[in-house]
Every structure is written in C-alpha cells, then in structure tokens.
Image (cartoon, rainbow, N blue to C red; front, side):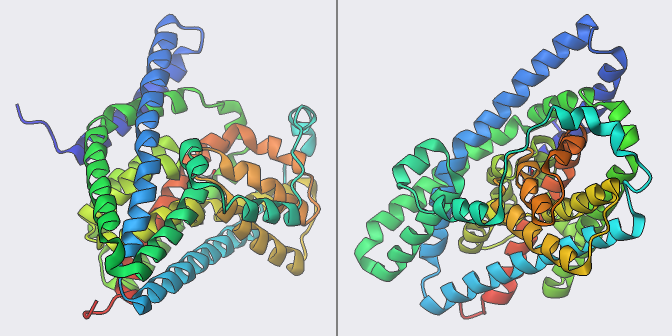
Amino acid sequence: MKLPSLNAQILLGAIFGVAAGVYLHGLGAEHQTAQTVLYASGLVGTLFIDLLKMVLIPLVFCSITVGIANLRQHQQMQRVWVTTILFFVSSMAIAIVLGLAASLYFKPGAGLSINLFEHAMQNFEAKQLPLPEFFAQFLHGLFVNPFAALSQGNVLAVVMFALMLGIALVMGGERFKHLRTLLQEALDVTMLIVEWVMRLAPLGIMALLIKLVAGQDVAMLAILAKFVAVVVGTLLLHGVVVLPLILYLFTRMSPLTFWRGAREALVTAFATSSSSATLPVTLRCASQQLNVKPEIAGFVVPLGATINMDGTALYEAAAALFIANLIGVELTIAQQLIVCFTAMIAAMGAPGIPSAGMVTMVMVLQSVGLPAEAIAILLPVDRLLDTLRTAVNVQGDMIGSLVVQKLATTSKD
Ligand code: ASP
C-alpha cells in the first residue's frame, strides 16, 4: 500500500492530534486512559523536539556560514544584508500596527474586572526587566565564545559568530576554499539527517497537539475569549492576507503556491511553538520546496528565526493594550508609540522557544507603567496563542527569504 505524501501525513497527524486532544479533555484528567495517552504523547512529542534541537545548532552554524560565503561579491552581500533587515523591521512594524489597531477598535478587556485575576497576580512574581537593562543584556549575549555558544545551544550567539566567519571566508576568497567545502559538506549531511527526522514529524506533531489541546484551561479561555478572538483574528489577518499580499506584490508568487511549499514548516511551528525547533524544517521548505537559493535561505531563514517575529510583535502590542483596558488606563498616542517600539525590541530579543514572548513582554508593560504582574492573567492562554504566533513568525521568515531573493539578487548574480 502506498503511503500518503509526507505533507498529507503531517496534516492528518495534526488533525488527528487536535481531535484526540479534545476527546481526552472530555474524559478528564483523572481518567486512566487519558493519563496513559497523555504520558505517551508527552514522551513522543518531547523526543521529536529533541531531535529537531539536535540538528539545530550544526544547521544554523553551517547554513549561515555557507550562505554568506556563497554571496561572493561584496556588493551582493551588502544588498542581501540590508534588504533582509529592512524586510524584518517593516513586516514587524506592520504586525504591531495591526495588533494595536485591532485592540483599540475592539477593546478586549474593557468590560472585565481586574478582581477576577487578583489571585493569579498575587502568586506571580515578574522579573523586572527595564528597557536599558534588557538592551544591554541583549547586546552582551551577541558575542560569546563560539565553542560555548555551540555547546550551550545559544542560537543568537552562534548566528553572530557564523556571520563573521562567513564574511571572513568571503574576504579570504581562494585561501579558505577547503574550509568552505568542508562546511558545505557538513551542511549537506545535516540536511540529510533533517530528512530522517521529518519522517517522524507526523507522529511528533500529533503527540504535541494531543498534549496541548487536552491540557487547555477552558474556563479561563471563556473569560479571555474576546482577547483570544482579537489576537487570533489579527494573527490570521497578518498571516493569511498581509504577508501573502506582500509576497505577491514583490514576487508574484500566489498564496497557494506558497502554502503548498511552506505547510510542513507552518504545521511544525504550530505544534512545537518554537521557531528555533522548527528551523530545520523551515530551511528545508524554503530551499527545497519554495526554490529559494541556498545562499539566501541559509542566511535569511536562520537569522529570521532568531530576530524576525511578526506574530510575537503583534501579540505583545495587543496584550499591552488588553492589560491597559483591563486596568482602566487609556494610553496616550505617545505611550502607544512607546509600545510599538518596545514591542519590536521585545520580539526581536525573544528567543524562538515556547512562551518566550511572554517573558520579554514584561518590558513592554513596564515601558508604559503597566504592572508587570499582569502577565499572570495571560499565562493560561499563552501556550494556545503561542501556536499561531509562532506559525506567523516562521511564515514571515520564509516570505522574507523569497522577497529578499527577488529584491537583492539580479540575474547577473
Ligand atoms: N514561541 C515563539 C517562537 O518561537 C516566541 C514567542 O512568541 O513566545 O517563535
């Protein structure tokens, strides 16, 4: 019997995972079968993420170094670099404006009483994270001994070192050709391992979704329904309309063609809630299915996985306004601008791991004097919303690589 394609298997795994999660939720946490299935799902899901994380660091290191080293001419390197950063900043800015506008319009949280959440807030201690300190910490984390960064799985520091090594390889030209070939082969062999890991993706994704859906706190979801609806609606607007429109305007690629090539990465991001863990899959989709040149994908996608987070930026802005509404504070235009700016920095600084945006959001709240403890209110729905915002984050990286390829490379390249 012929098995369905990997794409179809992943989609089926995701649908089955959600359905089984809903069923187990209905059985209740005490039920013996539910407990056994949840235990097994936890194990399988974690193993899948472990496998992705296992290949992540060698992959980031090799793909960025080789990507840059292949952008031989100095001018091309500069074009790619500048276009990438411009794309990241502008798409995140659009996402933030959408998040703010939707919250201003729908005013989630306005009718709710803060007393409802007093208990959660009392038991929660937010780590103080003033903007200058956050910024200093972020800068400090960029340059680290590469061996320590590689062994500790510090993605951002590995990205920085790989960038420098790639530039040095370009400058050195023929002198370093052996090292370049070696890194290229290391990249190819890592991608081969990614292919193997992907065979387990349908099962891993199913397991992760069973666990996630079965563990949802439905009562809290109902209380925060309006906020959840605004965030989900705006994320969908950004992911289904805005980003595909940007893609179409710049590259003429139809959203359907994009979706067909990108869906493995989108579903993996949804299930893992981690841009970093999804990176091996994102890179595979961009270079093998969306036909982005390896040197562009190898640079834009890993960099994007660590700093380009449209979904997170949108969420942080919307959540700040939600909390302001809840407390009954009206933010001035100047304060809204501060939220825009800090949400961007906070999203860029958030590592691509589950709920990272939640931690950096403390900074956004503090920047306009909102109580950091209020994020305790959002914790119960955070994992659920993290699925969609991570998928949008990852989508932005793939679309970024396609747009950069179109704008920064000419037929001569
Ligand atoms: N989970 C997100 C990601 O990995 C980050 C976040 O918003 O928490 O992209």
